[in-house]
Length: 149
Image 1 (spheres, rainbow, N blue to C red):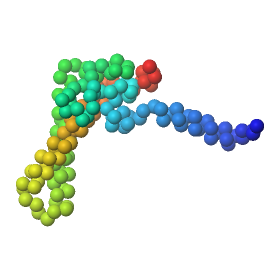
Image 2: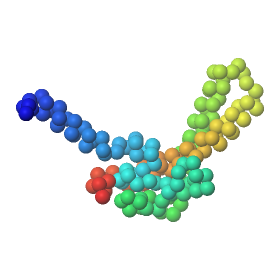
Image 3: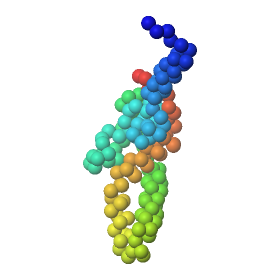
Image 4: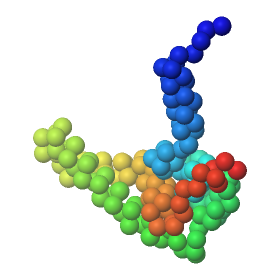
């Protein structure tokens, strides 16, 4: 048997603590995956982002910790402002990119490109506007004890 030196013990303790901390979900990861703000485990949306039939439907309660994800009726109407900001940012970016790669394109090129990019990114903009609004104004705080249930 080999004797564990002090440095090896420090490394093994670091590896154990690092692996434990990696199991806890980060805020950015939870937002990107559309997870509950309280436990960061349960899904906010009952369907996939590719399901266009129930694209905007939100779980009333978290399936993992039972936190209320819809605190009041019409809570997510405020997410329209975030969605609007996403759309404005998209239009500005499309206009800048078109001006960089093409020399003075016609107005129809701008309009068609903005419409197509809005249609393609609509599911992402709708979902993430609701996720950001819930994290920002939903009054749910991360609780590691709820995540372990």
